[in-house]
Image (cartoon, rainbow over all chains, first blue to last red; front, side):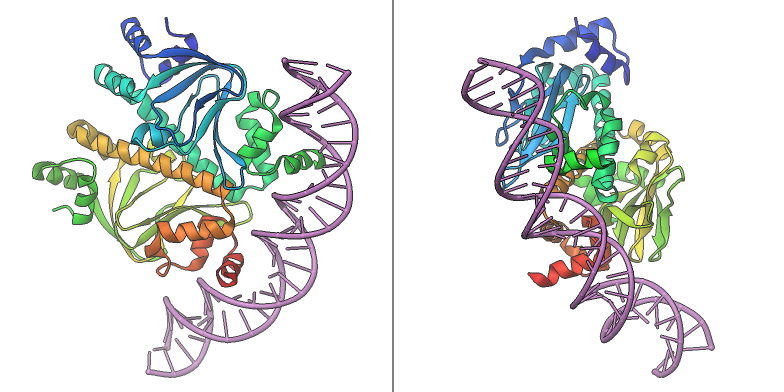
Length: 190
Length: 190
DNA sequence: CGTCTCGTTGAGAGTTTTCAATGTAAGTGG
DNA sequence: CCACTTACATTGAAAACTCTCAACGAGACG
């Protein structure tokens, strides 16, 4: 049976009967990731997309100076992959790994496309997720343009309250776009 | 008959016959915008999405200090709207206006949904555009995290070469996230 | 117990902004 | 077409913001 967290994610956008959920389950694989274990390395072709049941994954790139920059956190209930590579057959420019011990389902692009044919509602589900991702990605672009580092941190705390005390603070710094040292100073000054 | 620029945009992703193009045309409206004329004001509900035939539109927000921050430029061949408002029935947080005298088609969300039913290929066209927008929006988030102001300007010049000498430089500054004065200094220092 | 990662702090350097001044180009009304 | 106004680009100096580098302490983990 599908894990309730994934089942609930579907239910937010579409209605599936038991037969359909069972069929979907047949196309998914379950896997546990230890902290720091990779789901996807840059420069590979991304076959799979991950849905996080428990724990937390992140996607990030490494710049020419060796610094990591985080594009997305995926705590419980989120999908994560390198979407450009997953959709477009391009080499991945992102790494995806686990920040905490995690449990995930993963779905291959091949199986996803098969499921789109067999259960058209599922295409709708992913279309809506894509639209929502676009909205939040654009909001993040605006936030980076409009907000000070301090305000970006405050906003981060509102959006991801469950992450504040579960992942290292330096990961949050790599998401909002400041150095770990500077984030530390931001928090004290008040 | 549909303007060739829009027709070509469709043709990049889907195949439409003449009957289908004619039908689509019936759901579009054509309009000219003078420079500085608004297509959409923030705090309104966004009914329409615009496809630019000639000229250039932009979408932007105004922060609490009164500064403008540009989310998107739409020269010839691009769609532009406040997608959150257009899709989600939310109030717009963006303004969209013309940087140059422009010619546009516009399509209401209502008509778009009707067309999705009548010409399913069109839903595919917009799904692909949404996916591509997501990819480029995420790339821009990464660019803001990774690149210096100077490198962001250099990258901008590569992506939008047709804009460099047609729109005011201060608009480019508002897109890459620096003040007009600082962009001016960046360009001279070399 | 030792090792590694992380968070904090401080001083100095680099970056970007602010503010003010100037010159030029572009738009407007007569 | 000219005179006037407005918008824009540039420059400089000072201030504000953010980073770098180095040091230290605390906690996690084997």
